[in-house]
Image (cartoon, rainbow, N blue to C red; front, side):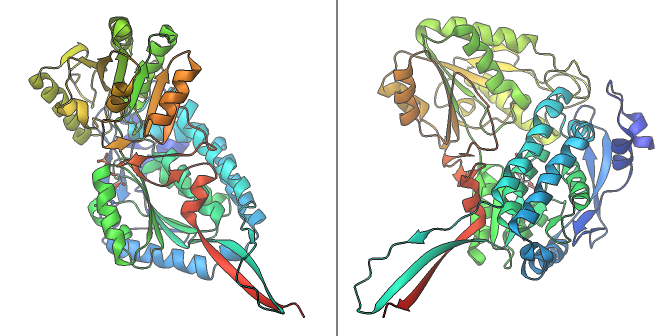
Length: 509
Ligand code: ADP
C-alpha cells in the first residue's frame, strides 16, 4: 500500500488496486499511451471528507489538447475504429460495461474518495448505472439507421430518383464533464459517442479526475483502439477552453453550469462545431393535497438531499398545497435532521461532504444570504464545523421570489419550501418561474392533475410520484437555460450523428 492510502482513515478498507492507483501520479491518455502533460505540471486531488491531498493528476493544457485532438482525428479518419463493423464496435462497448462491473468495488471506492459521496451510493447507483449505459449503448451500435424517402420532384419522362438518408458519425468529439457524478457523466458521454462511431477527447472535472482515468485503463483492456478515447485532465479555463475552441473538433458535448455552458457555446462559434449542453436547474417539486403524504415527504427529501444536493435536476423548489404545507415541511425537516452526515467511506453515512472548498463557500454564501433576506431554516442552515466540506441538510421557509435562495441554483442540500393555494394557472406560473427547465416532480393520486401539470410545466423530465429516476433509455435534458439537446435514450444519438441525404437519379427507360 502506498503511504497516501495508509493515511486515510476509513471504515471501508481500500482495495489494493485503488491504493496503488492513487499512490502513483496519474497521466493523460493520448493515442492509447499514458503520458505526462507537455508542461510536466500536475495538480492536487483532494478527499472532500478530510481536505487531504489523495492523488496528483497531470495538468493538461492547450498543447496536450492539440495532441489529443490529433490522435482522435487520426483514429477517426484512418484508424481501425472506423473500419470495424458496428457489431465489432458494439462488442467492445459492451465489454467496457462488463469491466466496470468486474472492477465495481474499485470504481466505487475511488469515486467516493474523490467526490465524497457515500460508498453505498457509488456501489448502488453511480457505478452500476455507468456500466448499464455502456451495455445499453452497445446495442445501439448496430441499430443506427437512415431512411428511404419518396420524392415528389416534378415528373421527367424516363427519369426517377432513389433517395435515402445515411446517419454518419459526426467525427471528433470533445466532451467536458462535471464533478457531481464523475464516472456516470463519463459514461453518459462516451457510450453514445462510441456507439455512433465517433472518436473522443474527454476532459474530466479538475475536482474529480480519478474514475475517468481508471475508465481509460479498462477501455484499453476492453480492446478500444488507440486514439478512440483520449483523456486530458486539467482545468476548465485552460484545457476545457482549448477543447471547446479547437478548430478540428466537430462537436462539443458539455455538462456543467449554465454560466460555463454559455462560454462553451461562444467558444464553439470559431468553426461552428455542433454543441449539446446539459446545464443547471432549479426544479419545482409539487406536492398536491391528495398525494400519498408519507411517500411524498420521503420522496421530496430524497429529491433534494440525494448526492448532497449536487444534482442539476434536484427538487430544490418544494411547492406544497397550503392545507398540507405544515405537515409536509415538518416531515421533510424531520428527515433532514435525521440524515447521517459523514465521510463517504463510512458505510453508515447517508450524506457526504460537498465536493470542494469552492462549493462549500458557495453553498455557505447562499445560506448566509437566505438568513439576511429573512428566510427561516426549519432544519440545518449551517456548515458543519471541523475538517471536510460538510453542510447540514437544510429546509428554508418564509422565502420570497426576490431572494437569491429562491431564484438561483444552490447546488447543495438546501430546499426552499413555498405554499400554493390551488392547482390553477398561478401554480403553473409559479412552477415555471425560473430561467431553468430541467426537471419537475408531481405528487398526487389524481391522474387528471398529472396530465394537466405534466403538459404545462416547461421541463425536460417530469417525475410523478417518484424523483431522480434515471435510466439509460430515458432521455434527459433541459428546456430554457437548462441546455441544448438530450442525453441518453435513442435521442442522444442525434448529438453524435450527421444526417446525409443521398439522391440517385436513374433512367426508367
Ligand atoms: P461548477 O461551477 O459546478 O464547478 P463548471 O461548469 O465550472 O461546474 O465545470 C464543469 C466542467 O466545465 C469542468 O470539467 C470544468 O473544468 C469545465 N470548465 C470550466 N470552465 C470552463 C471553460 N471556460 N471552458 C471549458 N470548460 C470549462
